[in-house]
Image (cartoon, rainbow, N blue to C red; front, side, top):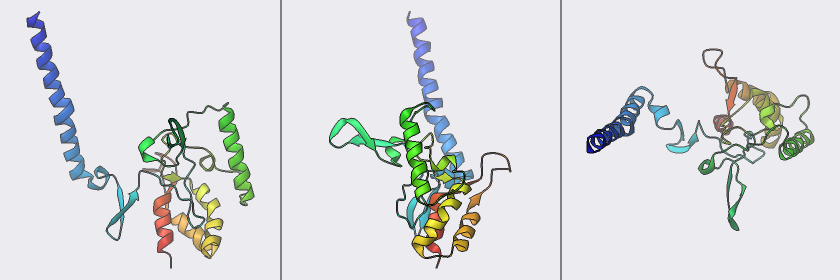
Length: 199
């Protein structure tokens, strides 16, 4: 029995060191050299201070800013730890809603979103990302259509020309990688930072 036990322990220790220590350290080192910004979390700095990450969405609620897509993240209820409450863009608890297409809660939430967008003056087809949450609940991007529909509201709240706002949105559109990987998108944090830089 000891003859079988010793090789198992040696292999466990060896593979733990290789795959649990050496490989992660090597990949982190290589990534830090080849892609330092991405390896560091794609942090966005303003005046030497970290204001966020290009990879994690933030919850903007002021009418003077573009809003991200809805978020399904939650946090423990301060009144009852066995329950949760909505906490949009809570990076400590990344999760989707897991609601299926026949879910009454999802249907009610989307209907309420449609009514709110229509009341705000949005016309025509509404982009899906304006009404539904992402899989992580932390999506930093919205579709250009979503951003363009928000542009008149933000322009009005800031007292800016609608054409200037539209041009700002279009300048922030990121096209699919290599022309076909992914969808056109606008990073909400970067758009709002560019908005703050407008004179």
